[in-house]
Image (cartoon, rainbow, N blue to C red; front, side, top):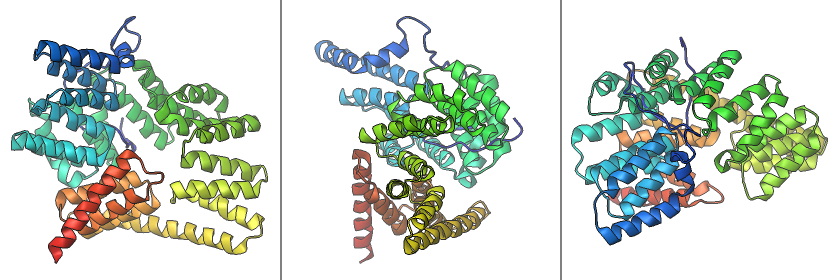
Length: 458
């Protein structure tokens, strides 16, 4: 791969130009009762293990939980890995190796506060400074702080006590975030050669090819990733979206239907499936799917915006405006929805509301131009904290807020006392509606930090 594109996500992190150590990825269907079957009985199994520990007082179980967590990480299921580590800690395994595995799982899961707490736990449990520095570098790489992380790549890859695959994944994500495609491509190629059974590099390269509009190559890579781990659905929905983008909606429909069964991807799959159904003339089924998914309590901007666009195309302008407004409450930076909303307001004769929507669209375009300038400055030799904070603020308002959170977290790595960064993060998590357990926890954390820093200023 000569160039590589952009992959993010809530996903993995690490990179490496030299080959990572081999580590097998769990394959679905490898036996009638394999590791994938254990996932279905995780809770009952944990209860049995707990009782066994209480009754026998043996110390075999922490390595057992760790092995289960490592297996889930290899199979690209960080949430399941974190669950096994939770069980281990409930049973008293507050050990350094548990904290280290939690760092890796938290990075793969992509929750910034979870990552920060995992790093703090490393220090609390007596991790050597070199190990703490390594985990911080991997977090910085995944966050796209390549000015700080990139110079250390060679050292991390030659550290025999580390996990080269983990390093490679973190650095691939970081290079792609910062559009350093050739460096990302080198690491992806190395992963493919050294761990040929791993679906992750094929999926990443497929995303890259898709961004570069090299659709046949992207399709081949997504299908290869799917063949290596049929249970992992990210390549499936990415292939469905690629097929939709290339006007092959009929081929995309069964893939979307397959992903609908996964709660974490249901809203994305329903939005994509509805658009594919609309394109094939099944507009009634498309609208019914969106309404049914929304009635299940799934508050997704993709669903509301898809419903609004569908209503607009059918001439239901009032219903379209209502749906688009709900979508924009959840994703204020959705410029395509803003444009359709402005058109709706015009069709309804609501000139002032139409002008307001067009003004918001212009604000978005201005913010995008400012972000480009800031990103150029940050990638230069002397990035400032103020530029980073402003970048995070604009990302929260006009792009994917998760990127804004990551940038502001990187500010706090450089300056833990940055009041503006804490304030922006507190405001962001307070704005999430309806609040989740995670958003509420993070809001309280950052509000406490703001209060502490304000007291210190007095």
